[in-house]
Image 1 (spheres, rainbow, N blue to C red):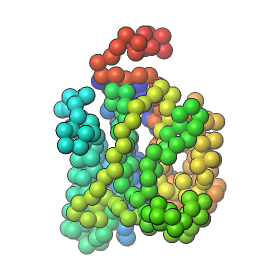
Image 2 (image 1 turned 180 degrees about the vertical axis):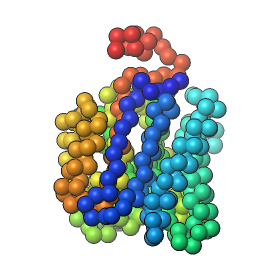
Image 3 (image 1 turned 90 degrees about the vertical axis):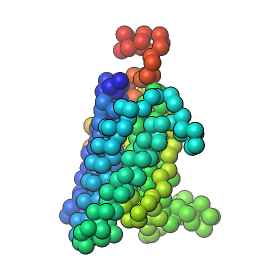
Length: 274
């Protein structure tokens, strides 16, 4: 089932004010209900290479694997949906692709990337992430952070050494403890949840949330929620006006209609009158 008329996805990426090149990569597949954002790292354009490899690898992997999945089935070992397992496998495959590319090319040694993936299926979502790129959700005009940063600073916050307010002002907020491609293996965080009509999801690189507060992010989304292209442009503009010290990317997805796999009388009636 194509989700093209059920989920609207759009996004922008920008090099920012300070950087002369962009190491972020974003992409989506409307039919699959899939959005992917990566923020690369590494010398001599290694970050650009790593993020592009990650996004391309994940989209290609999931384009093949999702069509073979019987929605509604659960992985016995983990308790996650088979869709979540496919997303995790795709990220791990991307990790292998990037790591092997770095091993073969000395100038890309040590390159890696963060990743955040959002997949819609059967009125549900899977969120998968590695690193400090984030995913937010706006539901009932309230912004909620759905991911946890894999950074040294976040670990110190978790242990009580910093308050969240102190952490926001820290100069060391971008020391990631986990990334795709820097090691032979990678651990992926998975989250599953229900999707509700009018939910808006924001995938972003740290060049956005480091520059502007969550309150301002929330205001931008709520004020322009009827036009996601405007939301993306406004978020980028605000990040650049507040310093733009890093590349900045915003990828947005909004649930337009229910999308149960087997359908039901309520969703069919909704489709007729929407």
